[in-house]
Length: 531
Image (cartoon, rainbow, N blue to C red; front, side):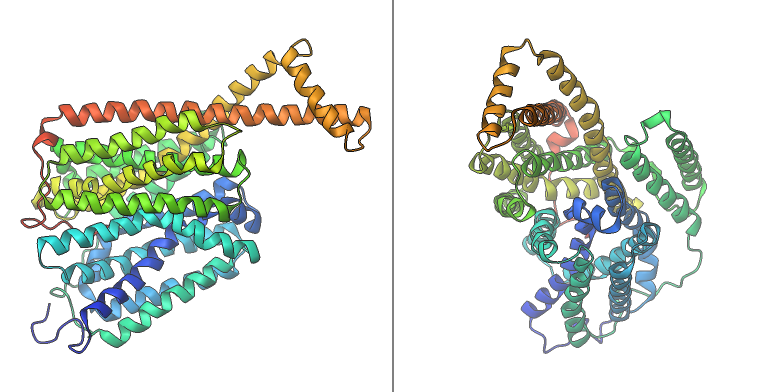
């Protein structure tokens, strides 16, 4: 950084700098979850399946995860103000194109570009943000605020998009994204000097080959996870070919990293058992985050809540996140052992999943969901900052940004795996329960006869003919069976996650490195990466 010219103009107060940086960070993070904030609306507008809408988010995530290492070279070559403005301008352009496009393949191309550009804009903004933090306390507060925003983005985007989609078409959210980028970009133009944050590094010997191989592998992993269930996994040639290509790509990628003088990833980092444990914790944590989608789906399908009221209920989740992030940051400042923080966080998540196993019912009230929703927020907020800092700080110093890159990879695979697991359980377990209910409910079953009589009586009481009422009653009974099967699937899935969390807690308790680990931001500042 230049000693003659400061990054920000001397007359700019510190509070304005921090607010401006936050105004630039927020739209970039929210852009991640726009596609899945309302899957039904996105699928209906573009004429695609819900899996396609999910994949449009996966493709953005894959672009970000693969570009994060290569992006550092561009960051060091271009002056900070110019770099930020180019990134934001191109992001606004892609949002404008996504606003008008109706072809799914074209949408995927520009969502991929948004992933790369979001990586660039967040990289410069977060770097500027963390250069303002000097003391250990301010660093910890900075990390907690950034990771708290990342956790809150999903419920916030649900609240943000629900009211818009209720009155407008789905593509309007891209127009809102355009307007959300402008205030921060304009303020940054006014308050920043066009200086470099580090010594200029020419753009030569860029490892484009590793980037392309790695990015293609991630896109195919996402494709397998999202569409595997739809195509019946290995019974379809598309999935078989995709798996074979992924294995080949990553074999070439690993060989290339081990033989290169300037590897894209330092594979040797995985020799550290502490680093492997940290990566495993992050992977499971993101599977658990994805499992929360089963609860929000339950609110919509079984309880009949519209997206706006689902968003209102998620405010309790936001409150839990904010409270627990504050507590976990305090624990880190007090140098509490990482093991204690992890055990507390995963126990809170375990309590949420066990609690929901008893809550899943067609007769549940909104008030019954407040406590578990808060528990989920408390658990996620307690774990987010410590787990990510554990991944980055456990990566050996000589391997540079490998810890950050691996952290993003584990978050990507964890999120993608949660989609695959939910799709698998929803199809097979739900069908299994539905078949069992059908076998038990015959015309000789007194419960079935009683339920049909209640339906027929209610329908004939509204003036419907007896023969038509009998047909409608059978349809209502089948609908009730499917709803109960869906509830049983949710219970089965949450029971599985509960056992996984219990096993993970035991691993944390017994793993020697976790017992002795204390995150120390004063001696070693991790890279500010949150994607």
